[in-house]
Image (cartoon, rainbow, N blue to C red; front, top):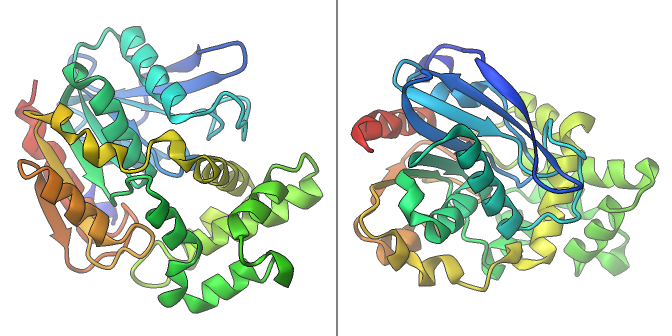
Length: 315
């Protein structure tokens, strides 16, 4: 993966933006201070940003904003689900755009980040110069149900371990019962549940087994925010009307877009990317033949960098 991306860089500016009386959003800016603006929207929700996420963009060309969404990463309070909805996140992106004085920017998002990218672009198409979307998730009930039950078809061992954390009487509705545990204030209750949830996802995101990925997902520093935000958003239908993102696709007319999808993505199966392309013919769909879900799979990483290179001329 390392050779697929630009060299590691450090931010030249960073800080916290207080967006309400509760939430403080951590942000960082990297690359060329006079470059083409771009914003990176991480997955999960709750996964947070990592240093490698800076490396999808040519730092000589782009001025990149990365930020941890409410409850995730370095934003505070950590793991906080109150006042945390898709609409709040859209407002936070606009607040950060105003903070940086950006007129239009390239919006880059994968997995949940693709959901948020589409929702943001549909709310503020005038602010989007191009879209780079990876591992499409449209926030529909069928996609949530697939995560909870369907992935068993491909990763039965991982699903057995996931569902096995619940009593047999609760296994017909894992979302409700995991949500209750993950939201419990007692770490002895919420941390084991969060780690089981996150490890389940981590075991399914790569084409080939990756113990390093599983450890990263299941570690205490990552698992709580990831599991808590995902359970919170899934319980609330991602705060979107069913099918909303496809129904409002006409709002994106004229915005250049690339959809990058792993052929063997089990977490966000290719059918969603296919349906998005059918609804949005002008978007480019790149189906990577030898990849799963992770942005760090070599074929996915190459395609994402190719997309950000392609949109260097977007204004």
